[in-house]
Image (cartoon, rainbow, N blue to C red; front, side):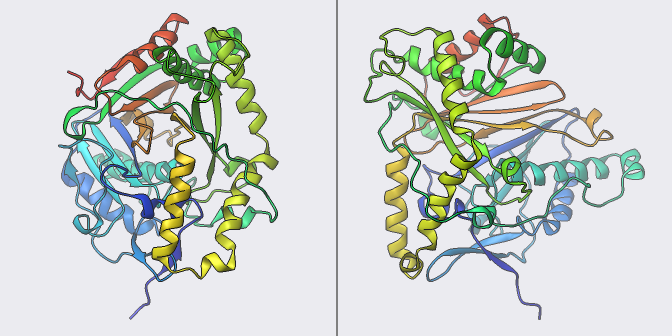
Length: 425
């Protein structure tokens, strides 16, 4: 009998099993919107074929004496179901054949929910694209004739722990541990999860960002989020409690990695009465400040310092020998202390590219994040074929922050089409 494969969690993934729960699910959602209705039987067959091809997804979470680890699953892939609940719910492995991802569908939309211990957005889309390819080959005989039933050339199966591969000893903490302003308000009833997509043309955003504000698309869209929160809560934002936005950075381009495991760190930008040394600020001033703050942190040495500090803590021999229950207490303490430092998160997973033969069948992609401690409103960005989706996930009844955000974009002359999942109606 063949022995099952297993591997340790990467440095970032170690925290997710410890803090996961119904109100802190640590999942993210990727969706592919096709130009046709989804056939659930074909989608199930695609999941059954693709899952065993990905060792990083064909796993279950196991609890060891000192650490959690991932072991080859060995069960049938998870059952595909029609979407009938809020997104980004906790993935109960016992109800999902022990898998840590979930596939659902709704009309013409394929949804992939991923427990963050498996992969970040790069790894998630790496799997998602192959799932879409396989579905389309099964659904369309003309595609099956053109494309062989195998993984695409650009698909990665690399499972290197790039944090360990690239860390350096002797780095100090680069995190800001000061508390930030936190949003508050009436929550959507019964654990409601609101999603609002702002759909816009990439070329229009790029022109406005570069010509009007001298910044990148990412700088501009992060600034819109910070501005919206700042404007909606101006009287409550103080110098000691600024609006601070966490921005995940994909480390792969900096360290020549194509791992499907987590490989990112957080940088941040903040705005408050003390940020620019003046009481009132304009959107132009805020955007310039956010641009400069992010640019000052996008340095390979600084990014290396951030994750090397985390890895060095993990590698301390004494910490490695501490039993898991005691280690979990320490991990939770550090997580909660760091979590209070940010108001929100805006993540940009970048441009999604498909092989040309599949492009005519796919309309768009979207991505969004579950809530986390102190952050019940977050933003996610991705684009496909010149169309960008800025997706806001929110647990609040009030939509003032996303409304201010998208009004600012529209005021800059960018045409914005709004879609929601309907919970605010």
